[in-house]
Length: 213
Image (cartoon, rainbow, N blue to C red; front, side, top):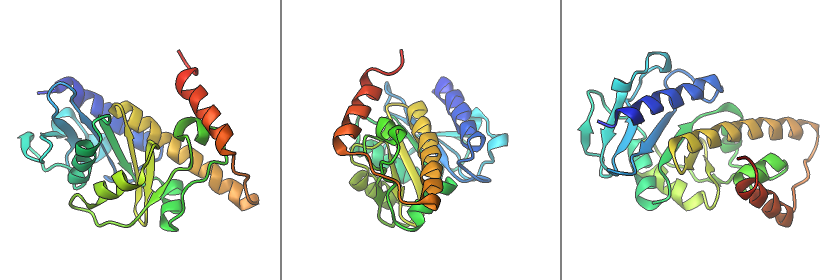
């Protein structure tokens, strides 16, 4: 079931190592099928280069296995918590990308010091609190901390991103790391200037409503 979505998720997972967002088997992407409400997520501990559609697991919002021969990702209940509390979200990504996770390690948000951050995130990329892996705790921190941003850092852990679909969430994860790297480099030179809230809003509105086709 949901074979097209499984195929899409395999391709989107491959974007994570391609963009240096994950190492070994870390990280995951999930998607909600808008027709059935079912969630597709990768199996736990599968290497990206070996990943096939059969490594995708289908669960319902309560975590009941609907289809699959493997255990779902250990982050599955956090993903499900996000889907339960954000009806606008149909894609979730988790990574431990190096530069963004460095900010998470010191419990600092990524400030709006680049127009690219204003464009994509509409403000600083927030940093939420610490939570242990395995149940809904991380999902709760994401929901409590993410605000209007498509990305949030988790203290001592990594990055979660959300989107209207899985592709949008993957894009947000890539942009989070790209901007985190530039901000980190800028911090080695001096103290970057934060863009005013008024200009951030203008930039974000233009990017959201005017930019692109």
